[in-house]
Image (cartoon, rainbow, N blue to C red):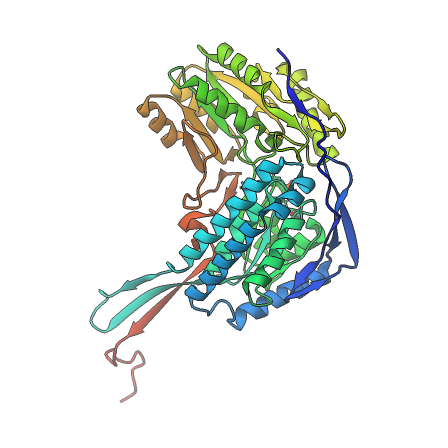
Amino acid sequence: MTEMTLIPRSRTALPDVRINRHWIDGVWLDGDAQSDRISPSHRVVVSRSALGGEADDVAAITAARRAFDDGRWSRLPAKARAAVLLKVADLIEANVEPMALIETLESGKPITQARGEVAGAADLWRYAAALARTIEGDSFNGLGPDMLATVLKEPIGVVSIITPWNFPFWILSQKLPFALAAGCTCVVKPSEMTPSTTAMLGEILIEAGLPAGVVNIVLGHGQPVGAMMTAHRDVDMVTFTGSTAVGKLISRTASDTLKKVALELGGKNPQVIFPDADLDSAADAVVFGTYFNVGQCCNAGSRIILHEDIAEAFTAKVVELSAHVTFGDPMDPATQVGAIVTPDHGAKIDACVQAARAAGARVVLGGGPLTVPGLGAQFYRPTIVTGVTPDMAIARDEVFGPVLSVLTFRTLDEAVALCNDADYGLSAGVWSENIHTCLAFARQVQAGTVWTNTWMDGFPEVTFGGMKQSGQGREIGRNGLEEFLEIKSVVMRIGRTRGNWVRQPG
Ligand code: NAD
């Protein structure tokens, strides 16, 4: 077989370098320093962004605090907040093309996927707008004739939002509209590698009529920008998506002020395939789950657990399908898999594969960097590793590249045990035509999302998040709104029916 299908450099001209500034208290500000983003695919500068320091952070946090405390957003009727969110959704849809283009150039992902990500994010804003008008609490009318109590849901306050580079606009949209729907004010820090769509959203928020100071954007590195957003006492909550290592750091730092922390972290997501499954659909989904976003995806289906009876034939099928997946220039609409985000990350992926080989696993497809004609070598071959045992690092660690590990099982219990023998618990999948098998698996597996006979489908309504070291808290769905709400009990006496506690002398 041919090993793969390559798409060489397309003729599409690259746009001018985009300039990004901080957006603090409604004003665009140059930073004292700047950094350039070099496109992973084309190796040229595609954006130049302000690099924030502690002073920028303090200014942004102070602006968000003031905007929250004076109620310019939090005390608006939910209907008015929803109207702004709906306008933002329309403006995102009107700007899909320029946003998708820069997202592709900064991240290396294919243009068709960047378009899907930006357009799909508009729906998250619309859904959050609908939720804004559903905020409700409880009332207790059975406490006796002289008592009434209500439990109110209020916005939690100032929220720091820190996002990664792999789905920059989607992940921002899993958090920000829900925080705004709740009535919070925010300080946002995108990844230093993919800041542009977040800055473009600032332009959209202005056009949509969001009051100044409600959202503030500080560009720059985790240190010092993200670290101060986590430590500052005027911040009430941090919501973070990124690596488990940084998530733990954030949790530790935030504990000094006991601020709420929501974490969406890594995964090592298993798919279990039984012999009675629709094996063609399962193989297609496995290929999708392995190579989508070059495998740089928290939900990558990076380990499959195959029933021994079908392991050989199924692996052969996945290898064969891999040859039809198009790797190459992300600017070409025919491309399905683009570039690796940085040279360092490419080297890390390769080190994981070579370590598996040294540990006794077999690399039956790929296993090494890839050069795309006209573009260079910041790409990685579609890679399948068999003979993987549960103790190997490649079975346990997040590789974050187009690399699939294959393990085998004999019984349902054994498959579930293999799935749960992991530090992570983000998502898991089962393929079988037997509903009992699927339900038993779904009940026993430790994962925030379980897919049966599908992979990576998601909807704004369906909440998302991880168990174990894949995170804490939930995003999107009703739970996504609840994360940004604080609870207050109001207990009321009706009339002067209670005697005094203090006994008066005489
Ligand atoms: P990362 O942890 O390196 O960085 C994420 C963000 O944190 C960036 O904005 C970075 O600047 C910032 N940061 C770094 N150090 C910081 C610090 N000390 N304090 C505060 N902020 C800091 O992650 P990444 O490489 O950008 O993203 C890849 C990781 O994200 C993978 O592990 C992936 O699984 C995970 N991820 C998880 C989900 C999910 O929903 N569970 C979604 C996407 C990505």
